Length: 445
Image 1 (cartoon, rainbow, N blue to C red):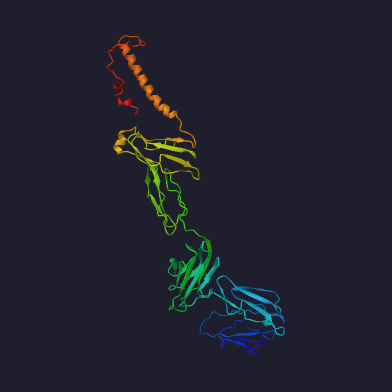
Image 2 (image 1 turned 90 degrees about the horizontal axis):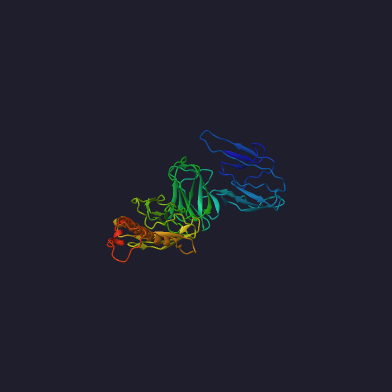
């Protein structure tokens, strides 16, 4: 039993008796003099939480200093004379109840506050629209009650999303805390928890989160735990998967503006290389890719057989152009010219073409049917050196071969090597240039 008496002895009249009133008045108790007498009596029937009292002395002609648990206030005059106004606020996660936000010290003859001080409590349910805040279990830091079903709605700017920092989570075995990735209970569940757990974080995909807390209505009085503390804040929206890097000896389509979930990226290898791994990667709902990045490995080609449509220069500066062509017996599929586009990294203007043969056997037996690509700086014409060499070398080989045959037969006939042939028939007139080149070793194609 708790009795508070308005005086300095046990005979003073009581201003509070717990047998008559269970709770102390929110506005507190005022003595008429300089004394209060507090009397506490206990029995052996059980144990209770106890009590905590705050007292304060103040001058005559002034109001007493206000107090609010789990909150704060600002005063127009720190001495609280008549006319002073006080404005209250609660700590994050608490709500003002049972009182006015602003009170004033009135009545010069008997100074007192015109309203009772408010109380700050952690309530069940609410709508929070700040960029950051706190959600507390009902009655925090005291234990929550049984049979509660609380719902909080968290809302931030539309171009943001919400980060949840669950700092304390101590629930009973029959209690449940659920997070929904949206503004109602039909949204996707971010997480569902019971019991005790260490600190962790959750990220919503939208600007709204719904928090639901349900406590077991059938649990005993000691089954309830302390509750939970959740800090939330808005963070930049991220609906995209991470950018995929380029692969060596291959390419992927030009990057899309946003790699949203559901986006599919296709990989390709340059001719002469084979794809290892999957050629399709999809951005999943959790903003991760469906598999590992593939690679392009050099294919198995017969020794001495050139790679079809392979450029002669493996490195080309930005602005360079590759011109592709296929020799007789093959068809060029794709663009005939590719331009090296500047950038970080630089990239080709498109995929390389393909020289399509009738069959692989034809390609293997006809070695001279390969495509040729020349790298040419942007804005300049193709150089004629390669064309001149291609024409001059076969002519030179033919001339040397004819000269060698002529010298050989001249020696057999005993004629001077430099004697010019006379008009008339020769004993080797039946040998022609075409028959001298029946040996495929000397074919130039």
